[in-house]
Length: 46
Image (cartoon, rainbow, N blue to C red):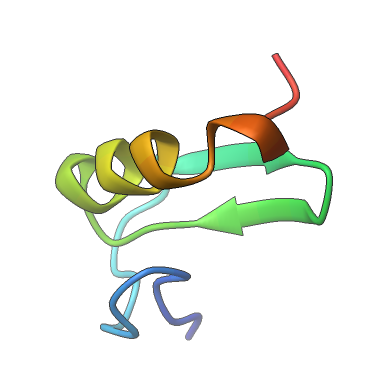
């Protein structure tokens, strides 16, 4: 099982992924995804 790229909790559901300049990041929840977006906006491939 994968770990969240923000908080290191186990990722139990698919769907919280984000394409970045460093590759695809996975998150355990919408909250971690949102915080990552806020802190790393310059790395996001939209």
